[in-house]
Image (cartoon, rainbow, N blue to C red; front, side):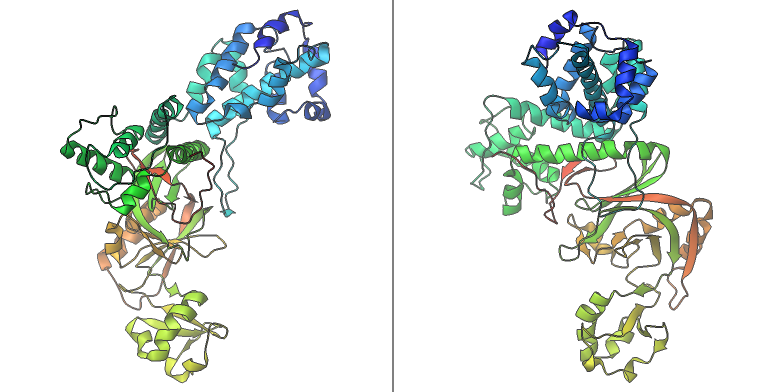
Length: 513
């Protein structure tokens, strides 16, 4: 419990006045000198609260705030982030509140801690690492000072965190599983276990303990039947996006043996990404791609209205995280083959047979865009270091981009697109592309993006694949925000949580074995 001393000692401190608080916070240097986390929010709060002290003279209010901050871990947050060291120093030093300045400092640090905590309840404490943030999106917390002041005035501070948490199935599912893990981790008897046997047997004690820790068994049941045990292993495999056959193969053992502390960190990341995106999902349509789950979700009014499997980049050519806006849909797109693919993958085949180009519907262009006769080129003189041409795949059913491409600006030249190779969508692990995102429901996504102009998509659906059709560019009248994120714990359209492979080795969580 934070600041036991302050709960009592503040009673003897000189009463603060609105004038003294207003004068102190008028100078940013004063706020910086006492370690205020967010001066802008603190100033906004006291302006709304008419510069009156909010904490010094109210024991119950301070206790309510302490109770919320003490529950930070239950909300996927860290209690020690909220002025913990500064306020603890007051707790253990009774000489720190000797004069009016010390009282003002304590008052402001309480406010700063409250604003910081409630802002992170709303927006999360861990924004995604975007390699390109074209939207420059940052969830606003400026309404938090107003809400805090309102709830204090109305005596409803105990309800504020509940009102700020996202009200979505996916958030509820993440927090529910996080709560389950917290109970296990906080138990005095908890110990990480490693399963070494692949036998599906009640004698495999570490297997039973791990299933209990994951919340798949209500208690450590060593009398469990083999039939039930196989079913629980299948449930675990579904939780880890694995083939649910009830067999303890190496991939299942690896997933089960991942420490529970690491699984908790994955959930914390997911919870805070959901919070971070919550505001923009409420105010505008959003396309959301998660790389490890190789999935796409479309939001309108904060609700999922479309879901699709996608294929993302393989380890050697990863899909980048980013934010941008879809600005155009291209019907019957050309595939302008990137230079690396052209020289490393296509050139060796062309050197074997120039007919490879025609067989795969490729054209050779000069750097100026002129179509060239491939038989007039000395292909054996070319290499990765010298390749003064562009290879373009013409439109048609065998075009690698299918018949739909959704463009959004980014420095990596990646995009969302259709594909003729539909069978790969049936796999659990869909990491095959050169970085672009192949969308199973590309036609439906294009219709959603084009809205009233969706007739263009309906027309090509009727026509089907047309070879050598010139690309048709359709501008999006209201560009749609798109986010490409990386979270190894993620959810589907029903809100069900699954843990996925850290396919790009991006998670550097610190956890205890």
